Image 1: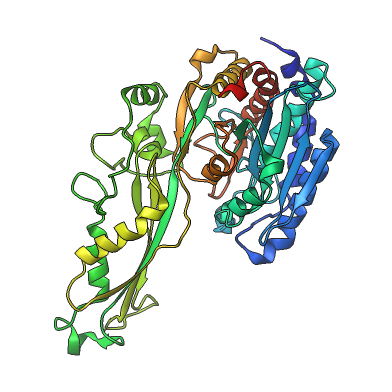
Image 2: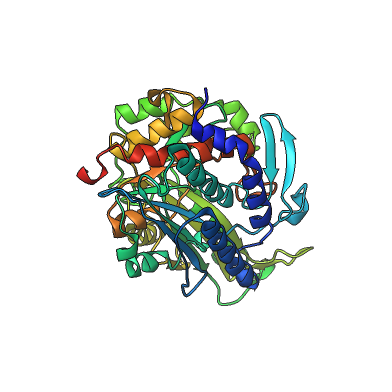
Length: 472
């Protein structure tokens, strides 16, 4: 099938390629202070690209950290609803550099099994997902013969998402009047597979904790004191082994008290998503087995159930050779993914209660659970905005909207802050794939997916103008 939107996108792919080639060369790593000038340069590049696209209002918003970019294109139609596109222009660090097949900030075209790929840090997370809107907006205007979009489109692209968005909520509160909207379109996600049109409908929240266990005042000779005093590393190993029970459930007291159970409908919708577990294990996971909470499928465990993961543990002597000691301290970092109705603020008491219940005599514990965290978020499956999104995705993939599947994103972002501050519903439009190696060496985007994403964005503005967003 064809459409004016598709025809325009396909005729202007070189523009999208040129944009990404220039933008991806900017190493906008927000986690590294040495790259602060690059993050600023990335914001300026995007601001210039938005002006070139035609947005009449484009501003770079400074924060105590990295700058965000704001743009606005008012619709000329009276009473037109307002849509806000969210994304980010910062990227993850590239370590380990030696595992990259091509330099991470030199975009490289590669012919893959599913079509042409573009390899670079940020190719899909999230510069590709943002850049597709530049082409999508142009396609929308040409296809509809309009001088302004069918809905007022605002764009907010932050520069600290990969560093935990530490200043994003404050920016939203400070600029809330400028950012008021009827729907938020999050473009920092993806779809289930290249031939499976789908929409993310939920993202998990995130909380973290760091634990320090202390035993003797100093490192001790293991021959003189071993077997006679408690060893903090032994205590840490025992503690972390108790984080889950024999059924794979997290053992923190009260951890599941607020978890909203999956409905039969939600489980049925997740079961419709094609999922080859063997292929998934053999892909970027490179794992020998799937594991986790009993009673749930792998898709449910990684997208719709809460988790606890040990991210690191250390202590004692780790250099070459041997040093026969009982270490004075042991340390561990843990993160928790949260689902609907859980809140990061509840984790501090739960973690402290779990540590206290599993601490052996003679070991002292310091538990640090930072304030803040990320709350989970979700979309209303039956909202007018969702109907518009499904129609747009369906047209881009030549499918009926009823054939567009619902997926859940296991990762976390600041989307809940958008809901809390702006009070607008969320929908998710992204072109990424589970196999895109985001946050890993050799990140890529499958270019045909990006083309579909640009087309879906073009359809979306027209579709949103036809549904009663403000009646929600």
